[in-house]
Length: 469
Image 1 (cartoon, rainbow, N blue to C red):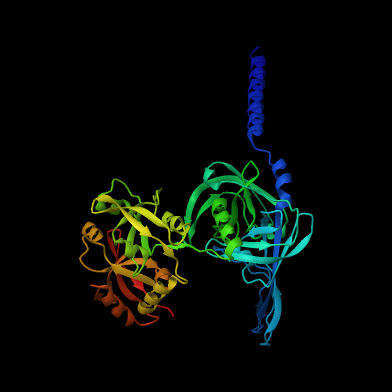
Image 2 (cartoon, rainbow, N blue to C red):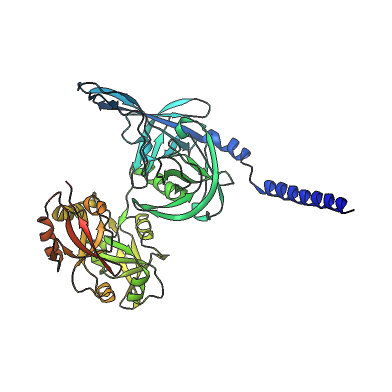
C-alpha cells in the first residue's frame, strides 16, 4: 500500500511539473510571424572607402585596416600579414558592415551614422538579394543616425511605434547582420528606458539585454506588435563582444531627426548655454530640497540664452517647457529637441523657492566645443573649472579652491578627476581663484607627477597628477 501511494505521489508531482512547464512555455512569445512580416524591410548595408595604408618590416606582423564596425564603446580590427620594410603608401578599399531598415515605399532607409561614416560608396542589399547603391541624404552624428535613399518603388516598410510607451520588462526583438550573418534574430527584454550615456547628451537610450554585436548597428528593434521602437546603436563591453547590455535609439527621437534630414539634410537644435551637474543627496540637503532632483547649473556661458534670460550659477532647473527634470542628463535632449526661437518657461529652484523664468532659445553654435576648447588650451588639463558655489562651500566647509565644472577628457580624465571635484592645492600651491589655478597649471612640468589636493563629496584626498603630451 505504501509503495502504491509512493508511486501515485511521484505521478502527481510529475504531472504538476509537466503542466507547469507547458503553461510556462505557452506564456512565452512566438516571434515567427513577426519575423516573417518584418524581415523584408530589414536591409544589409556595406560601404567602400578608399584609404591609404602603409607597410613596415620589423620582423613582426603587419596590421592593416580591413573590415571594421565602429561603435561608441568598441572597435574591432581584422587582418594580419607579415611586416615588410617600409614601402610607399598603397591605396586600398575598406568595407564596413551594418544593418538598416526601409521606412518609406519609395526607398528611404535609416541606419547608424557610424555604419556609413566616411564612406565613398554605400550599398544596400534587400532580403530578396536585390542590391542598390544608396545616396546619403544626411547624417546627425549627435544621435548617430543617417538617412539613405535608394531608387526603387513599392518597397516593404517597417511600422514605427511610439517609443514613449515602451516600459521595462517588455519583450523586444532585433533583426540584423552580426558579423555578416544576414537576418539574424535575437530577442530579450527592455532593461531600462531614458538611459543617459556619458558620450551622448541628446539620446535617452533604450537599454535591453538583446544580443547585439558588430553588424547589428543600425538595425531595428521591434516590439511584439512588429513595430520599430528603436534603432540598435551601441553595446557596453569589456571583452569586445556582447555582455548583456545593449542600447537603442528611441524611434521617437529617430523620426524627429528623419523629418529634418529629409527637409534640410541636417539637424538644427536649440541651445541653452549652461554647464550642469546632477544633484547629489548632500547637495540636495545643502540647497534645502527634500530629495535629489533637477539639473544644477554649475556655469552660465557668456552671451548665451541662459545668461540673457537671467539664469544663474547655483540655480536648479526642476521643469523645462513643462517637462519634469529628474536628472541633469535629461535636460540636454529636452532642449535639443526644440527649435531656435522657441520661447519656453523654466521652473527654477533658487534661494529656497521656485520661480519661473522665460527663456528664448537660440540656435546651437556651429562648434559649441570652441568655448570649452579655449579654456582647455589655457590650463592644459582637459577640464573647465569655476568658482566653488556658495552652498557647496558652506556644506563642505570649503574656504578656497576651484570646482571642476566639466571634464573634457585628456589629462583630467586619465588622472581620474570628476565633475564636481574641488581642487584646493596644485603642485604645493594653494588655489584661491580660477585665474590663479590657470597660472599655476601653466607652470606644471610635463611628464612628472605633482601633488593635487581634491575634495570629492566632502572628503579630501591627494592624488598624483601628471601631464602627458
